[in-house]
Image (tube, rainbow, N blue to C red):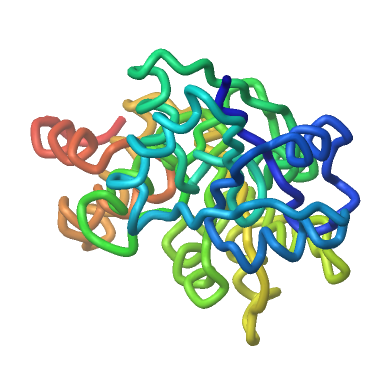
Amino acid sequence: MPLTVIPTPIGNLEDITLRALRHLREADLVACEDTRRTGQLLAHYEIRKDLRAYHEHNEESLAPELAERAKTEGVVLVTDAGTPLVSDPGYRLVRACIEAGVEVEALPGPSALTTALVVSGMPADTVVFAGFPPRKGRGRTELLERIATESSTFVLFESPHRLRKTLGDLPADTPVAVCRELTKLHEEVFRGTAEGAARHFSGVVKGEIVLVVRGRTVEQSIDDVVRKARAYVAEGASPSRAAARVARESGWRRSEIYERLVKSRGPET
């Protein structure tokens, strides 16, 4: 018997597929992130099943047991909304099944990641999914640096109360799309700059947020960037502050700008 990984609606219950409903009806056991939420979904479609809570706090210990059951029973994995494993539990169970020789079948279906990417209007040829960004520390700094230096489209999940901080940490002119409550009654998509989005969401923000960010779009040579940093130094800024300012504006790494700035010789021509 395979483990069947089934995406569930991210908001609108009509977004579940006929194939997903068939597998749910035929399953012996449904492993789910929250039995109450999955129970509501199944009740809507008049499906009654044995539900087993499988979430971030017990997935490591429960995965081997579920993988063993999947050898002889029809086990289905769902999360609260969207596709399991995409910033949701499920990775350990999938790995446990693979190691136990159990087939894993993944159904296509709803995902906030792809829905936001499509509606954002941004390029989808090179995409980086960053999940929920680190709140602070080196991990957050490195992510912001990647956004400033890579010409990719970044997709992030963000909580409503941290949205403005994340927008404020981006260069003001960074193209963004803030996708709120996708597929739900109060769906909203704001497309503009990080600065404009921060103004738009200046009040109380509610709902689930997907933030799509366009990475570095303006190509400047390092010589042009260093030349601009020199101009800031001539105006009175320290080399360190000039390098940091130009890094924010250009997307080049501050360390590289600073190194070239202090090594440069002679007046600007």
